[in-house]
Structures are given as structure tokens and as C-alpha cells.
Image (cartoon, rainbow, N blue to C red):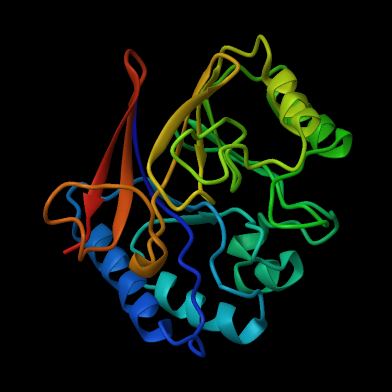
Length: 252
């Protein structure tokens, strides 16, 4: 069984920002490049900070761009996002449930289950995780051993090359998330955003990675020649024998 996921992150769309027009073009280029892939990805995930500030008007612009995708889209909440406005802009046939405080949900029907984890904090830009979210995640994972990929905004592992290597607001919150996954070998990968750079790590025994910011003006890290002027996203290819293999792609 095989699956292809395209991951985009940290588009920070804001038409009123001085770099707003460039960020819109960056996201449009990624969408167009994804739509030209053959075969198309089975799914696209956006790992948060869709808009620079989570207002309905900015989400309307994000939805206009992402609405051109030729494959299903699933989104996670970033620290810049507003959960309520995000649910309104991306109802996605009801998978973003209106009766919960957190944006955690499970997507079935693929060779790999996709589970969104809400790492948004009420107290700042760093990540958070609590017993309510842990119980929700446990309920989704225990008793179903289908290969599972988790996607979230904040990386719960250290990124040594970052000015802010630890991007959760407390070690305890990250340890709670790690402990929730302990022993669940069917969790095969974690995809994150927030750091605006390409980085890899582990959450317990699970390989994890971050995605470069789609917005070129916000992107961090070093990349090969030819990547500097192109918006970047990642392609994650899964097969049952080898798990996920990932690559960074420069949008044409």
C-alpha cells in the first residue's frame, strides 16, 4: 500500500502586510506545482499559520488559493490561527468539528490514517499540550493499528540550528505528548511546521520533521542553489515496507 502526501506550512497570508502580495504568490505557486504532479498526492496537509493573523478576511484569501487544489486538503491550527475562524473557512465536509475547543481529528480512508493534533497555546506563540488533548489522541490511537501519521504545528523536539531550539512552552507539555505515543508502533511519522525551516528529529521512537515556510520572506535555513527564489514544500511518500521517504520540492 502506498500514499503520497504534500505538506505546506506557515503561509502567513496577509494582504495588508508589506510582503503580502509576495506571500500570496508563493502559496499560489505551491498550489499550482502540486496540481501538476503526476501522480497527484493523495492528500495535502497544511501544518498551521495559514494566515498571519486569523481574521475571516485573511482566511477568505487563503481559502481562495487553497480551493484550487486538485486533491483533498487537511489543516492544523498554528499559533497565528484562530480556531473558530479556521473552522468556518475550512469546514471540509464537517471534519473540523464545531463542538470541541481543540482542532484534533482523524482522517480515515487512506493507506495511512492522518491525525491532527492541536498544539496551540492560549498563552503565547510556543506549543502546548494538555490532558484533554492527550486523552483525545489516545482514544484515536488505541485499538486501531493502521499505520498513522500525525500532523501538528509546533515541533515537540529540539532544533539545534534554531534561535529557539525548544518550541514548546514547557518540557512537561512536550513530554506528555511523547508519553501519549509511547509503545504505539503504528504511529510511523510526525509532520510539523512553525520553525520555518527543514529539520528532523524524533518524538520518542517516532521520526519527526518540520517544513520550511512557504513564505520566502519568512523562511529560515540553508538550501541548495535554485531554491532561494522558489517557495518550498515537501513530498512524503509512504509504502508499507519502507515507511515514509521525504523530499523538499521547489515550486516552479
